[in-house]
Image (cartoon, rainbow over all chains, first blue to last red):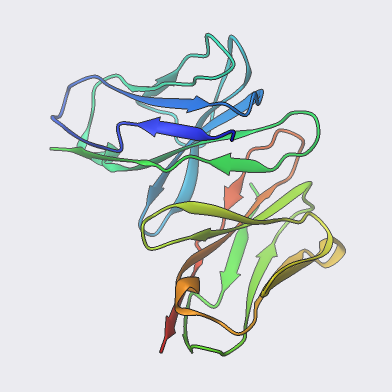
Length: 113
Length: 109
């Protein structure tokens, strides 16, 4: 079955370190998204991509970057982790053709100490 | 940007009761989805419903796009229905979802 996976599921890192969160989907979807979830804010869009070599900033993109070198993967990088980036991160994907329904991965809980 | 408001924010039900969750949005939408976030944090797709009515077992949803609201109905609630229910919308064809702040549902025995 097609799926979307994220790794690691949990990570603790120190302030100032670079961190990369992986997202891999086997739906063959063109569109991929990164969201963060914080208490009181729901889910907010960080970055998104409509295809290989395409990346776009979302609502809360400062301090994050993404790259899309193939259809299946959209890694999220925190260049210099800050305590404000402690959050749960969700990756999602959707098909650009048939419908816009998004499917979500299981999430990564990141703690920056 | 678009505003998405969900009500009620919290809901406690006894097992077997019915409930209606509401999602109001401030602009026309091309995509509306309902999700259930279970106690383990997983986001489960319930409905993709930019307009009309759909049913899936004990759950059904209706979106009245012209009046900018959607309703999620849960009948004969079970303890496994507990969690947070999110409504999310997209105003364009870009498939970028804006989430409401959710309705936290607790179903008790």
